[in-house]
Length: 192
Ligand code: SF4
Image (cartoon, rainbow, N blue to C red):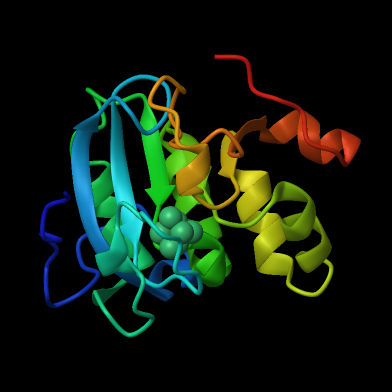
């Protein structure tokens, strides 16, 4: 599924160009997968976050569901791992697990990656409308939405499974173009 996370167990070091308190924020992660062409447009590196409050039947990544599983790494360490092959990839995908239960550190990571020219795709089991509502109480959720380019929203529903869909597994899931969606306050579909 995805590679064991090959990060320096001593944590964040060597990212001298990152000067941000956010670089020390912890993220619970399951692993990193490289050279994916099914998790968003172009060749992408995928960060699988650890922990999901749902138990969707047929979930493709059940190992990422336990909230206390995976390993904890800081934003700066993950940033260095994710830009390792930056010349070959179009962008970075945050998958899960459920990225929005760790919205604040992932928003910081996305911000750093965008500065390196990476675009950001985010998978979530929540609906865009629910995330907007939740962001009234939790600023990090809005920050992560604002740092993304495409949101793939909604849980995987086995009875809606369709192998012909681009970048998603079931028909209920939507590809949402985040910048215009946030500007208009409603979901705007991303055209593949
Ligand atoms: S939301 Fe995604 S990661 Fe979570 S259980 Fe459902 S399919 Fe699995």
